[in-house]
Length: 340
Image 1 (tube, one colour):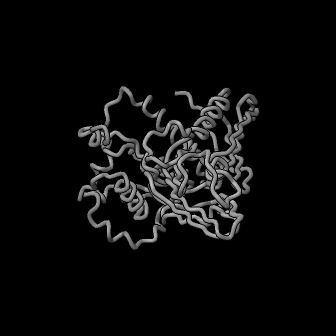
Image 2 (tube, one colour):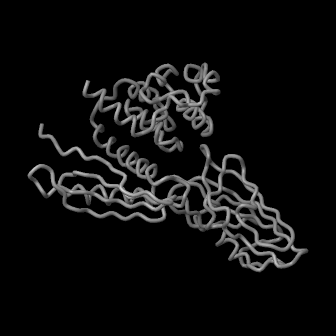
Image 3 (tube, helix red, strand yellow):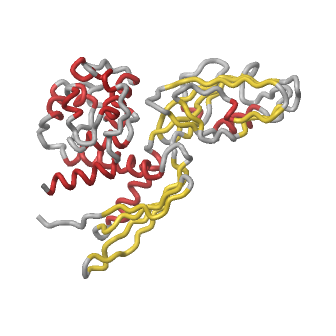
């Protein structure tokens, strides 16, 4: 079998929520192929969290005004749309509350966020109260999603709630350039330079890893469509229902955990549900912290954890997770293992 060029990924430049990465050498034409695919996934498929609905006291629609508040409700909704939040753990939907009285500027930092939500731009202005006796009170609904969801696409909201255009994607800008590079005496190989600007809810390197993981997941289905499953994959497929076939990537797990599981071709919920705890902990770079994060994600998505998987999990709850290696360490260890 003819060998293809083995590319390496290098972090060229890092800055505030910005990263530039180089991938080379790539086979001729692969730079555009991979660059375009990664760009589309980064912009449309990465998970995130956003404010999706708001209920403002004594306000019934977005064309109202609030006495003593400089901005009208439409402006307030636009300001809420700019608030960027990060989910600490797996998230379906949660609520936050804002109640401010007296003259002053109201910002995202004044909102009472739940413990599993972190706001990354607390300085974002929500409204300005001009009167000492005026007040503003609102309830916010925060949900998880991918890409962009327009307000009119939301169906399940109560009377008095105002839907908001939800920007879930953590990516603000992606650009890629393909250059020629040398490999031996050949000069027609590709170098892919990809630039990523995020909103601060995710690191650019993590975003690139997640996008590549999503691309690999889809390509893997094509590669294995006519193969018989084996090992944990066969065990998971034997009892596979709709929920068992759900990709683990949809649970909001960290890239570190997903990459460790992918190293053993474990990519679906049904596979891990049919494994024992010791089997998971025997996976390279999958330690107590990874197990705890996996169990938390399954529980958050309302899965019943089998005793064989959860048994003894409490003894890991106090662990600091230092035995879990980074993504880069995992890839290096796997290369060394394959060489040996």
